[in-house]
Image 1 (cartoon, rainbow, N blue to C red):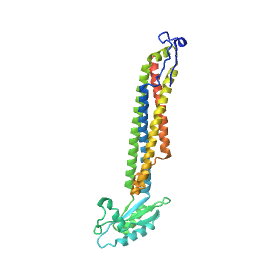
Image 2: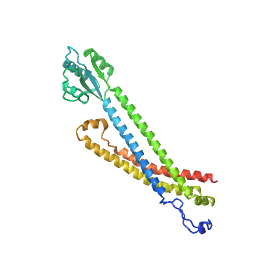
Image 3: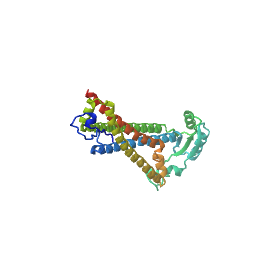
Image 4: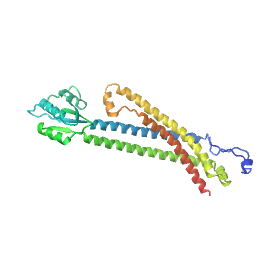
Length: 316
């Protein structure tokens, strides 16, 4: 690994060094293997956090788009009311409104099935005032005048209620932003913990090679050269740990994506896909994990170099 081979005759360090070859940074120490393990774990956690944030952001974006493209009109039953006639009126008003691309009314049985997740199946809901729903799909090319539509509905179909789903869009946006923010905080903490681990490992390696470092420094070796020895050593350790941790993270997301595809293909899969997406990280997500692994290697090298340079400046 990163070693400096020296002898007394070549460098004039005196008889105390003899003719032994001296390793500036021991390449196969137990602490080295432990650091690779720590870096791999930290990289795995950072990659899982970043990947989860990407998944949540993509899924919430899809939710917001789907919710924003739909509206619903609720028609509540009342005594003496011909609800079927009111449903047809609402459909005619909606179809005549600019910005509405498609209109579909749920039948009475469809409306009752919407209550099954809460009330269970097999219940007779004929006596309950189950409201009827008319679903509007909006046109992306033209804008809908909500105030005009609400006014028309109130005049022609009293008791109808237009829900533009705006509060759900706002809640989804807040939820997704909060999740991403928490992921960023966790990601930052993981990187800080990794930098601290590298700093402690660098100080330990320096303590084990203190005599060699001091002699090199006082006989005129450049600080950049000494720091470079440590930087290359820890850069390689970071690359190994980042590769292991990043590969495990990619394997985890691939496994979860494969399992989710099997769940979605089963019973209730449509609901799972609508709520949680396909758990597919996508090309950008995998590139991000690869970038994290490479960044970890750079972080370990830069951290080690800065620690050594600071120590060498203190010797002056």
